[in-house]
Length: 123
Image (cartoon, rainbow, N blue to C red; front, side):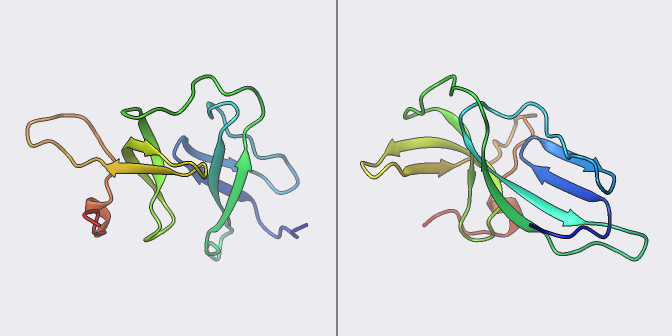
């Protein structure tokens, strides 16, 4: 259990949500049956706390199985944040190897890329 002295804010790949003190925090549009990481921080007039990463399993049945070539949002170990990627292969232990996406020179698609955050995505 955690004591809250200020309203909560949470950020995930699906956006940012806010809730006043003592009220539930609702995150809409998350994929059923998936494990997600949500960054939670407290905010007040003085400032904001450092984010705390919380791993959750979204209730419900997973709609699609993860497969090679599938577009995903994956957590990069370099900073614990999620970035756009494609599934390269599935490993027998349940982990997934991804290829981090990079912006295409003439594309208008908005991507959240490891390379834009200063990370080395070539390893």
